Figure 1 (tube, rainbow, N blue to C red):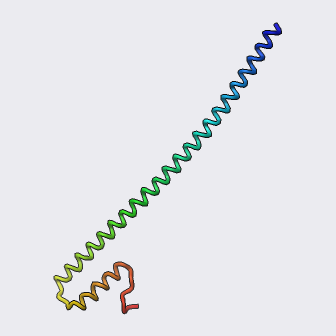
Figure 2 (figure 1 turned 90 degrees about the vertical axis):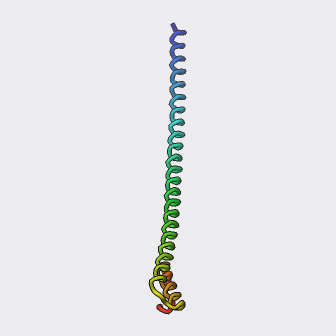
Figure 3 (figure 1 turned 45 degrees about the vertical axis):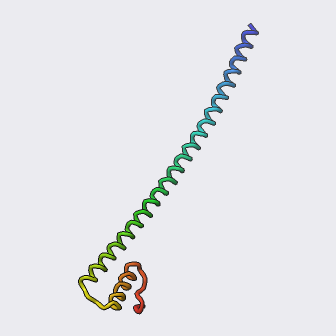
Length: 109
């Protein structure tokens, strides 16, 4: 009988060790999974920010190009509609370019 009780107690001790080992392993797996999830979220955030930055830069470049095209068309249209001497025309074009680019117009500080 004593031998049976010892085997039962040894079995319980082994079962306890197995359960503790399984709990430790599951805790480790959960920690690793949590870290992987945080890494994925951080990477996705970084990629999203970079993608948005790239799209904004592309939109700004496109808008700048369109602005230049529109300005060139306006200058060409004005050149056809209004006959001005070259010096006056150059002053007007420079003033328009300064206004559009946010620079000060020479002589108007």
